[in-house]
Image 1: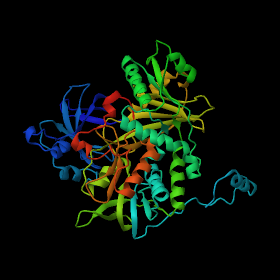
Image 2: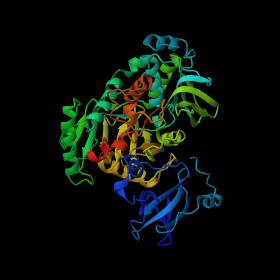
Image 3: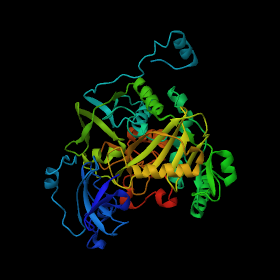
Image 4: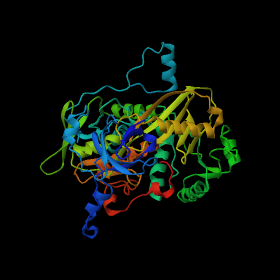
Length: 106
Length: 417
């Protein structure tokens, strides 16, 4: 059972309250009509699927209902941090330095 | 190498079982191969077998970071079926089923393929309509599948609770009689033995750290924990780690890796004659020849490489099993584990060429790769040998995520794969 910190409720709660929302920081294209097939493929289907610290979205579906972002190590499943959806992407080097998680393998 | 037969069994029985030999050597890598296959699971070892047997390519190495068959080949719940909706999928999985039927003879190794029938339960109106659509589609494709009423389903599988007041009421089921199970370890071992007999090197405990490409962009070989190994062709069949390996060749994959969990109970006398799948509640159950109930669960909701998965999912599956089969509600569970499955956006696999000359890939089998083992291996070997797709794997390209020609099994019926 993962224990997840909701940055809005400021509480650490069991995984059952949350819904996974896929990889974070994937921006929708500004001008969709300008995109090539390759760019659409990358936007729609290609994910980093990293073995290591992963930027991802979660939704506190049985709590405040809000989406937030998290960095989780996909090897140990340990969360490095969670942060509000409008917060900037945190510096991975600093997060990794302050934890026992290894650098991403790719 | 011993040829297994009734005679060899008898001879060894009379000599105290002391003269059995190792079935394949633990090879060390040579400096160069015609083909290197990354991943010694059923799919990779099978591809080596078919490369050697059907295409005469024997200068092959199968390399694995762990022991052979130690990944998803040894972690699945051994279900084999081919009742998929779309023409492309039905062809692929039925091709695998054709090969399963002759596999023990082909390999001279008993893979314990058992056509005990797979029953997929319908719990609501959507399930009923979707399964009946599957049955019609399957029949048009020559794939056997038929509808059972709740009473017929219970006759086929007596422990089934068909009470209308059940938590998950049974409104009927789709039965594929030709489907069943096989012993998963034996599949890896049988392919390993056969490939090795034909000259293939099986190199275990040797992680492939990167794929090396030459100045022209073509594959040159693989970097491993035991040094660089030159290869004209490289085929990646690394399940949950495929995207990590492919990334080193500069190919980004439309894959995400999730833990898929399973568990087994204490062994009991034969009680469960078939395989039952309940896709709606994600509970899959059969009984092994050792007597354990083998229970499959769904994938965890988050991507992970941990090979563990969370307890809530197991709890949900076991609760559903107890509701559908009340007879099991006092069974004790012995072990649970997770395997890392690589899931594509359309839940169909990718088998074929890549943008990199000499690099081939077989991946994206998600939660249903075991059943396809011989078919995947056979068509992958064809593609690696000839450099072009086999008719059967031709639709399952990597390029379909650019062209939009998806094989959308997931959205077709919302069933497991």
